[in-house]
Amino acid sequence: MPEVSRVIGNEEKLRAETYGVHDHARVSVSDIMQARETAPHLIEGFSERTRAYVQVQNGCDHRCTFCIIPYGRGPARSAPAGEVVAQIQKLVAGGAPEVVLTGVDLTSWGQDLPGAPKLGNLVARILKLTPDLKMLRLSSIDAIEIDDQLFDLITQHERLAPHLHLSLQHGDDLILKRMKRRHLRADAVALCERLKAARPEIALGADLIAGFPTESDEAFGNLVSLIKDCQLSYVHAFPFSPREGTPAARMPQLDRALIKARAARLREAGASALTQHLNRWIAEKAMR
Image (cartoon, rainbow, N blue to C red; front, side, top):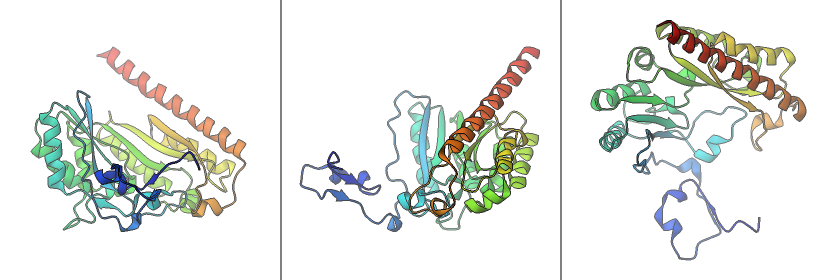
């Protein structure tokens, strides 16, 4: 592409020397699978924004058949808890009332650290050691990896936001297996029921993919009905798009028009669920 002057990798973009005035190779991309950095680029410059974001994890060791992310982000690696807590303390001291923990595979945090602590351990330390933090929020997480301590904190701690965005992807067991996901439909429904029972006000969102290869009408129906069965209030709906180099790109593909139509129907179901969620809150407030 003649309009591209340089290509810089995910490792190189974090180094100041990459942007120097000296001559550089047109392509500066190292082997991402050799990456071992955690998050040396923790950001402080959130100015007067309400939310500050702290990346505590990077990379992914899973191999979902539709996903190219592991090949762009490298292996899973975690920022040490002490560094994370210190960063959040700085942000709170600077006036940030809310912090969002982010990561490529957030719930895998800690697996590469001494003792392999779970994400619940990190969340507990943050809440304990930053008492002036008004609200802690989690970004998208893998439902199958919620540890017991994290579940208890999500459902019981008032300074942990009553909101979760789950990486569910589909609602049909055969499609989930072909995606190489590590949960089945019943697992997702059971988790959402437990969360709602323990903390009724919690809002649940999810990533869902329409039009995955071999998705039948019945399988798509199972996907749409997952919104109701999991009591979702928000849906991030994706039309399936093949990524070169992934197993799903080599599977029998659906017609693009059908994929787009199913994604539109999925978005409509998600919009209806959001309206119902908001109306419930309006009705509850009116009764107080």
